[in-house]
Length: 478
Ligand code: PLP
Image: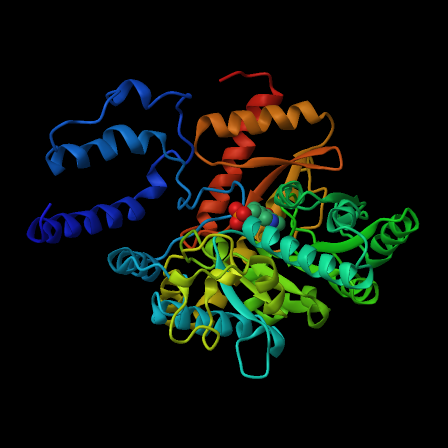
């Protein structure tokens, strides 16, 4: 494809994208396909000769779209969101055209410096203390990682390095592997599975602390666990506090947990993957109390702030801890300003990074703080509306307090009926939800996020749920 053809095809693609998004409400949100559905439609081997673009493009509708779960649909209520927006899309186009790899400052100075600026902007928007921003008085700062999972792992590995160093300074005769074998990390029993994965990769024991009736981990429960482990000769070193759990968007008591971490010299990480986006609204910042005592925090603008996946903003108080965990310095990566400018390769696991700050910059500038706040508040308002509808039907219950844009609900009585309800809802494809297990209780999660979702959508989504419920409870198998 030459430049002239790209000009034409690029414009056609923009038209296709606009029509796709404008009419997305008319598509099944959840595809009715089975595993292997692409297999029979695509040859086993790649073409020897290049194919005309028209043929390739036609297969998008013929082959790909029938198997897409439409995450941008206003009727997508599964998981947590992954939203797009036009300014973010334009940034991705430009990022792809530039396609620089920002591992050191010198490998693309604008990539590094814009990342420092936008993480400072975003940090200020959610009210982070100065120590987490890039400035001359701070040793901390922000970085854009791929995912919340990766941020959790980076935080755990950094906490591990710091602790190993501290203990080996105290006990120089004890081999590092012996100290390592005693390390214990903590999170609530509601934490995301990525915390378990981080502990698996970091080869440390993970202890789950029981959450309370509000699905929240308290400082006192954490302290009990830490004391018990110290008595056994173990070395507590790292805690993951979840703000906005995946199951029901509950919040750990950050203030209490951060106090324990400070007192016990534990690295305190905050995983606010979804809920962190809401902290741009002052009324939702109450959950951040205690943030002045933590070591790291991450959330995903790629979830609720209409910035494309992948984009996780992570801030650390002490960037030396990241360097301690990830610093390698071969000659081919040194440059004239090594040591004077930030080289993000020391703040992350891969060497290279995409120019992700561009999309955050475009979105923040085009919507402004006010526009983004309006988007969050609209999602919360629609979730309140949905919650009211569920509570108005005596056959249903909302077994966990609603926070932000997530409502969890189930049919009263037998778990099996709620399971059957979800299965039927998803098989009809009009709306899409996933379940969660809240301490043995099976619930359906209904998350609202899309800027396209309207009050009318919520009403028709609820009608769909009521219709399926009526059928199910009357024994109708249609
Ligand atoms: N942490 C929490 C609380 C989440 O809800 C999720 C996903 O929804 C994750 C971590 C994982 O996010 P990511 O896909 O960015 O790794």
